[in-house]
Amino acid sequence: MTAEVDEWTCVLAALSLATDLANGHHDDKTLRACVLAVGLAQALDFDRARQRDVFHATLLRYIGCSSFAHEEVALFGDDLRARQAFAVVDYGDVADRFRAGAAAIAPEAGPLRRWLVGSAAAIGPEAPRQSLYASQCEVGRRFGDRLGLGEGAIAALAQIHERWDGRGGPARLRETQLEPVVTVLQVAHFAESMVHRGGVEAASVAVAQRRGEALAPAVCDAFTAHARELLAPLEREGAWAAFVAIGSRFPVVQSSHRVDDVIAAFADFTDLYSVYTLGHSSQVAEVATRAAAALGIAAADIEILRRAALLHDLGRVALPCALWEKSTPLSAAERERIHLHAYWGQRLLARAPSLASEAALAEVTHERCDGAGYPRRLEGAALGVAARVLAAADVWCALRSARPQRPAFDDTAAIAMLRGEVRSGQLDARVVDAILGVGPSSARARPAGLTEREIEVLQLVARGDTNKEVAQRLGISARTVGHHLAHAYEKIGVSTRAAAALFAIEHGLVTLAAHVP
Image (tube, rainbow, N blue to C red):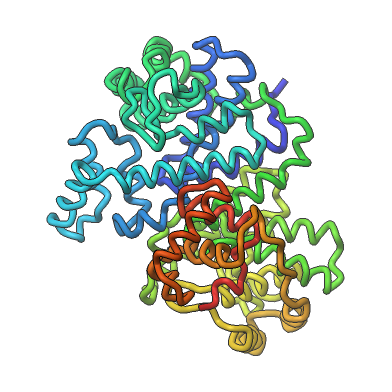
């Protein structure tokens, strides 16, 4: 009988491929690593519960990767290039850090810039690297908790940058302090990358070289002893079939009822990619569903619309954050690249058959009634009412939010621009009337005992403002901002901007109004 995975696992696997795109990985890298990781767990005699944790943690290894993209843009210019350059770096090797740092900078920046960044990566302060560790680990742990993963998987997501020799971060754990699940995850992902780059023998050599330093000795030994056997299912069946065969061993109870958790998590994963899109997908979903209800759309269709709205920008992570945060006008070539995010989103969603209706709707978010949209330049007759609602909701939320080239428009200006797109034939008049007629959403309760001032500070820091910039906006001192931020971080249990931004999204604190200077 052909193996199958439950709906939750299938959707999680399909959407987790977005984390491969966000890191510039080769196709199916994470699926292949999952197969290898579970094989290693079996070779190490892990029990079924711990194998399940290995499976889920390996699948979500890069779920926090988008959270530090804004900072990577500031450090390197091209964040996606930087993530590729550091993909298999040995952080314990100064020369390797130099090579990765230099490779992270585009050649056109010149040899001096490449040398300076390489030197900073090799012998510069550790603070930027530790900040990356903390950001990705805090965000990964939070997503793992939201998705209801096992304790071992959640602990592993909080330790992805730790090393066996204690020279990792953010907690500098070593040896048996590491969660066993993470030791397997680390070897599986590294080994799979090296297999792709140089084959099984090269991977075995590379794993052996990091044995006892970055990687756990017992797990390294298991890989080098059984590498060909562990990789055989991938060569024999292909990545997806081999993944399904493994995933079918770990069924999820009430799978279909938990799919919304996965969709919401990956909407937030997408929005964390840029400080200019925090909460955008959930905002679009709220506006679209309220307008759809006002238009009398059937409840079942509204649910599809809501999910499509949450997933409509998933393909954004396939492009560098630097492109989304460019403050100068985009070139024609850059605009064409941005249009490709609709294609990438559709490609990801196509891997989850249960989301076929949502995928079809999400794909046409950027189409327009006059045929001037993308990616297929569809015209009005090809766009149903749900597609028109989603398009208008996306435009409205974008207008009411700041972008790199401009501040957020106030209500008056945004309404005028939305009406202008109706007059030009791009948006549907009845749909726009519905969106403007539903009014703003009701204010949410303050979470975690945060004060109004702490929420104001948190909103601004989440979108990338420094303490000095927050102070200027709020008319208080930078020192006072620091006190408010420290109290807020303590209350919500985070230590990084990225994790604070995720908390703000989760609790509806990143509102449209919050983006208006």
